[in-house]
Image (cartoon, rainbow, N blue to C red; front, side, top):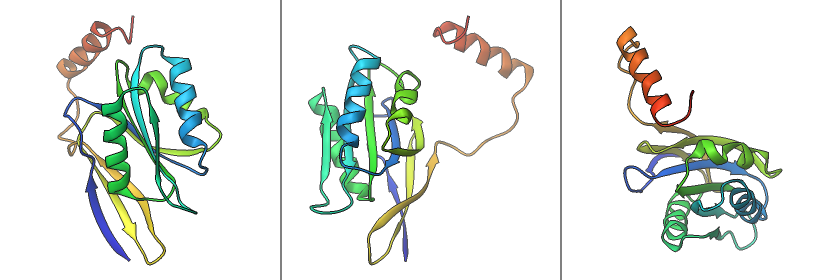
Length: 160
């Protein structure tokens, strides 16, 4: 077995969701769920088929994001993984609908951070072991940090 670290290639502020599913219809079901949940959101989905032709299947409503999803899915080449790139919304806006798709088994991350995907490769294929999402923790928040966090969440409308 060989371990690899595969970076997700994307613009610095672009959000994405990386997950695992189990069936070819995942890409269409996720597409339908996203457009029904957040009208106007732009997205691209790449899904690694894990049997038969073993192709990257894709969908979305923004050609640039679909191409980015295809490129990253192919770079990962891990059975039944999917990646969704989002603009005009955030993972928190669609995460529950993605998780509720019957084929979705798990979510590895939902972030705009730099991410490395830890992949194991064997003679059979590849699988995601986990992700490195962002920077190493630097310490424990202070009272001033709590204040900044709470103000930020209210400023962007996630808390009242």
